[in-house]
Amino acid sequence: MQSHVAAQRTTKRHSTALRSQSMARHGCALLTVLIASKLAALQAHAQAAPKSGFSLELDSGLEYNSVVSLNELDLSNNEGDTALLVDATAGYNRELTDSLELDLGYTYSVLDYRDIDSVDQDSHIFSADLVQSVGGAKVGLSGFYVSSDLDDQDFMELGRVSPHISGFIADGWFLRGGVVHSTKTNDINPGRDATAVISEIDAYHFPAGKPWFVHVGYKYRDEDADASRFDYTGNTLKVRYVYRLPLFEKKSRLELAHQYIDRNYSALTPSIGEERLDRRNRSSIELQVELSPSVDVRMYYNYSDWESNLDSVDFSRNVAGVRVTYRWEP
Image (tube, one colour):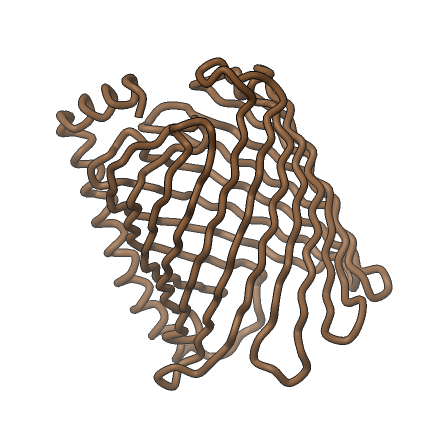
């Protein structure tokens, strides 16, 4: 990566206090898994009670990335590393009327690499979704806000507001469409501050009596940044196949997916002397096994091939990981 990132990495490696903090995070993740298993056992023997609308989800795991990158700054290197991932989510769901539903959520998310500490991130994520049933459709308005720190310094804020509509259009066919207005600020490189308008549509097919479904999605993005060299229009196409199956007498789900992204930049990128052009393909496989009604484990692998005339985002990489999730609804 660029020299200033390398300098941060070197400094932090020699910081005993921050290294201790990283060890504490790993300890917390292991403790999370142990607590989750104990709580799940207690919950299995608890008497049924009316749902309060509140929920808690703890998700923790390890991931290996063969090329560590920082997409928001277009940085990467040829080194691989293992990361600890922890997400703690609190949610609240309430039916305000017979046809109006409110969902609120907060997530604290940690990405903590073992060696390449300069790309460690902590994020606070807030979400809200208000949905009104209208005939056979659901019309809603969702909001989303993220505040992230990079290497214990202010990094990025992202806000999104999206009206959306969804519903079954025929037997086994479900459609969802929405328009997103997005704003982001980048404290490290203010030229990347941007607004974007995104149009998205997703189609799902659930064949009657079959244990599988297919999801196809398309997204068009028009991003306008403070620095014109970061302006671009982009297309995203994704395809997913999900198959539910019993595995070791446990409910399981196998998912195969592929995503294609292209970005066409509208101004000259000074470092390459031409307009930037990105093409990104990502294929993935994931197996989720339900250990109990409130605990499941996910194992996943994905391969990404990024092609660009900007060298720092022209690479291929492999990512593999395992995560354990615990959910609790009092």
